[in-house]
Image (tube, rainbow, N blue to C red; front, side, top):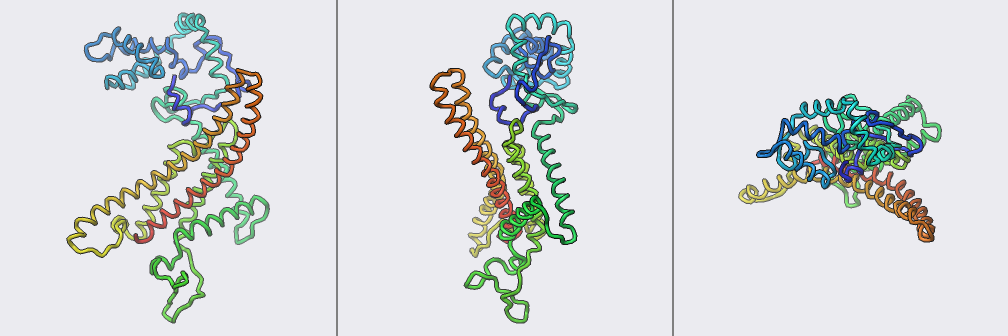
Length: 424
């Protein structure tokens, strides 16, 4: 019904154990419309109606439907409009497709008569009920679904959208309470407050400030260091080596890094909760986080150097002759600008790959026990304990990776932002 690759992506339903949310529909008209659209009988009726309006060149309506029937089983039972678009490059008007689907799905007598008879002969009623058991489909009031993993049109609300809203709500409530508890300079009190303070100080002191630098670095650059590696401060009255360093610029960016760190950590931890899943295992989420880092780098760099100065600052300083500069500098500038975009793209892919890899390893280990459960015998009892122990170990590793990947993403973000704020 849908490309198997989609099953590692976002979905438009929450899945719980089948016994917790059983489905016992007695006739086709009771099934959700998104599921009915995937049934071969309904799809054929839709194809016959659409073929009356749109067919490939030199094909009759019957020939077009027959060609689609031969093509569809090998392409995950894609509907007629997908066949036309992928094979013939012909696009069906979305309003025509939607009105045709609505018209077919409104034929209650046909669904509970002819379609019900076909389902009864093929045993599809029980099969469909089994597949839908445990699936809590998210109501879509602003869009239409093609299947349980793909949107058809409009704005469709997915599982991870809801999970992310829950995560943001939790973070807002927790940190609002934490902020009130330390208002007016009051010390953090309580286990949770002290835990949050430890993480906040770690991100500020070990990630943001070292990566972006002190205010002195923006005045004289990173090259003006004493032989022992410390900054030499000169305020016009001789050297003042004991003067404290200030981090006003780094601290201005720190709230963004705090938000990234805690959002990623919480998303990763949600992936350890059964039947929830981790939003950071979806490319749309990780690319969104990378875009936040890129925009922060762009805005911070533009404030420091000006809009044009930021882009000119991408070119490293080089002492070259005029003739060589004309040839070399434009090429280097293009390479540096491309690298600016590429490294933020890699930032998104890196987080995604690490999170998905852990889930796939855990799934493969558990899958061994599930696959051998049908076989039974001594082989199953030999593999099952190994699978349980392996899954437990990988689960503990994923708990560590949940924090590690949040740290790495935040660290790289801080480095990219700091690089944008300094001269190349």
